[in-house]
Length: 346
Image (cartoon, rainbow, N blue to C red; front, side):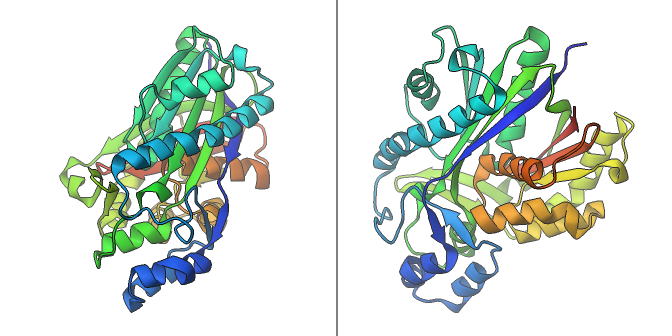
C-alpha cells in the first residue's frame, strides 16, 4: 500500500520586530495609550513577531486594498521562494522533481497567482499541477495537506505545500474594538513549505479529519474591506474549541487504535494563549506537550496557516521524534473549524 510522508520543512521570515518595541514605537499611540490595549498586548504570549511591513517605518492604515495586494506579491514572492528552496534542499529534490504545488494564503491574492509566479521563479516544470487555497484561515495548512497527500497516495505525485501569510499588510485604522486589539497583538508574518512524498522516510500522514460548528460562524471572520482585510475574533473561540476538540481527537485516534496517552508529540496551532490552554486542558496534556506551540507563539506570533507547520518544524528540531512516534497536529479557524492530522515518524 502506498503511503505519503512529510519529507522536509522549509521556513522563511521577514525581519523580526520585538513586541515591546512594536508597542512603544507605534501601537501605544495607535490606541491612544489605552490601558486595556496595553494589557492585551502584554498578555498575548508574544515576545517578537515578523513583519514584511514595519508600522513604525511605513503606516498602511489608510492604504487601499488594491495597493496592499500589489505589495503582497512584492513581499510574498521572495519569502515563498526562500521557504520552498529550503524545503527542496531538505527533501533532496530539485525544482523539476515537483509534480504538484499547492499555495495557501488568506492574506493576499493576485492573478496570475503566487503559485504561477513562484513556479516560474524557482524553475518548476511547465506541466506542474498547481492549486491555490485561499481564505480558509489558520487551519488551511492541514486542509491542503489532505489534498497533497491524496495526490501522493493515489497518483504517486511529489508535492510541495507552501503557506505564505503577511498579516502586517492588514493593519486597521484605530478603534476601541477589542477584537482588533487582540488581532494586532497576536498576528505575524511567515512562510512555511513542506515536501510530501510517496512512501519513504519522514512523518507519515495516517489520517486527517475535520469538524465545523456552523452555529458559531460569527466567532471568527476575515472581511475584505476597502482598507485591507479586517479580522473578527470573538471572545468565545477558546471555549468552542474546548467543547469539540476532545471528540475530534478521540475519533481520529480511535480509528487507528491509538489513545491520547500514546501520542508522543503535539503540534497545536497557538491561536493565542487561551487557545493553547483550552486544548491542553481538554486533552489532559502537560506543559511539555504544549511547549512547542508556546515557543512558536512567543518567538514568531500567530502566522495564520503557516503556524502549525512552524510548530511541526520546532518539534522536529527540538525533540527529534523517533521511529514509530505518533504526532497529532491541530489547527483551528473560521467556521469555527477544527482540523486534526495523525502522523507517524518513519
